[in-house]
Amino acid sequence: MAASTDSAMDISASISGILNEKYCPNHLQVLKTFTSALRDQEYRDAVEEEAFCSLLKVLSGLCEELQSAAGEDDGLQLQMAAECFRGQRNACVQSARNQVLLRELGFIDVSLKILSLLQTINLEGRDGIFEPLRCGIQFLGNLAVGNQECKDDIWQLSFPDPLLQLLSVDDEKTVSYASMVLHTCLDEAKVEQLAEPNNIHLALKVMELCRTQPDLDWTVLIATQHFLKSSALVENMYSGMSHLERVTLLELLSAQLGEGDSEDSGIPPSVARFLACCFQKGCGAVLTLASGSASSDEEALTVISLLDVLCEMTSDHSQFMFLQDHPELLTTTVELLEQVHALGKASKNVFSTAQNFSSFSPGEDCSSSSPSISFKAHLIRLIGNLCHSNGNNKNKVRELEGIPLILDNCNIDSNNPFISQWAIFAIRNLLEHNKENQELVAALESRGTADYSALRELGFQVEERDGSLLLKPVKKDT
Picture 1: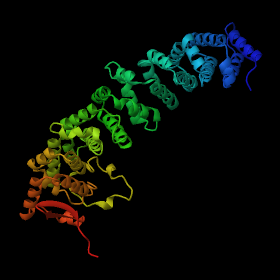
Picture 2 (picture 1 turned 60 degrees about the vertical axis):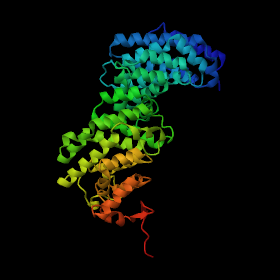
Picture 3 (picture 1 turned 120 degrees about the horizontal axis):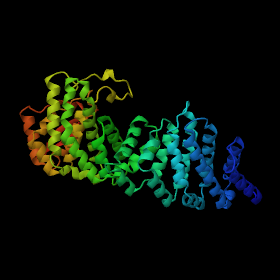
Picture 4 (picture 1 turned 180 degrees about the horizontal axis):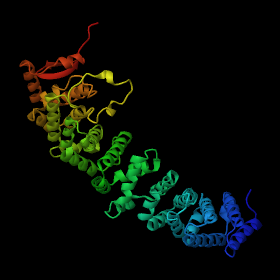
């Protein structure tokens, strides 16, 4: 039932009365009555501006009280601040009129001052500040929903340090609500502001939360829906990140590629170029894994994650197929495959072929054993992708002597699940419509330098037909 006109006036008068008296529990009850009344749509639509003016004066007075009390005996003030925020929060629900009123009256500025002040109060039990913090941030979230002017004002008054402080509070709900406000306010122009050197620390904080609190949905949405769409921000964040933070960024990017439209993932081509350059520049770090030194694992894991992203980008994502022509990417990949394959043959290490399938339980993620698991398989996958329907790259792989190298990796390998399938895929792409490559494979077979037994065990054979070599399934005896 809607509050009557008389009761609405009584509530407004009661709020005004708080201003002339020392705070007491009865004042908290007045605020609770106002908060409760604002849950009603009719009351929200009819509440007078004067009631909000009085509420703002109470809020401003609480701000002064909290500042002067310095944490001493301010429990009632904290409760009253939380109740003010609840009332403001309720007032904004499905009410554009009240959103405009509260913004124009100056609630955003005072609320942010209190939120900042709350983080400096030195209480014996910090839990006392969390309730007003949570309610105040929820108010900002409700104020911003569907109102661009409110979003812009909140951004102007809270970016970047106040938002960073709220994301750093040691309270999961506070951080979640602050992330929600940040997500609501963000747009393309604001993301570009985040990319500036003086502001990048806020973006890095969001990415840190993605790594340390993966169940915090709002930060993941901020990263995938906003951050990954800005090449400037991705590049600046990547440069300022630790290797583990880079892995988190790359994992989010890979997940976005897997979920998005194959024709438009929302990730700019310039991001793909940047990551390809990072892979080429740093890929040698993965070779240190052969020594078994744990100190280099983090850098190597970044290289492995870069490779995974490049594989995903060149698999059924037409907007990234320009990577087939990226300078030296194919050459780097073939040469790296040659290096890790040689290391695996020279001594027993993580790059050596293994048949130790018994160490993996059914359904277990074998990548937990070593960061190098599937690395060779993914190098071959990337080579196959870069050669798909690309004559120049097919020729380049032949010139780099990559075809015998790939054929030598057709054996089943527990360190590289599905490597034989990716090798078959790559060989098929290399032979398709390329007579020189077909002749090379035929010559390898006639000289006995190509071992096709592994292919035959997998149910494939190389067959010559009309002067061309085809990779085809072997017919089983019935």
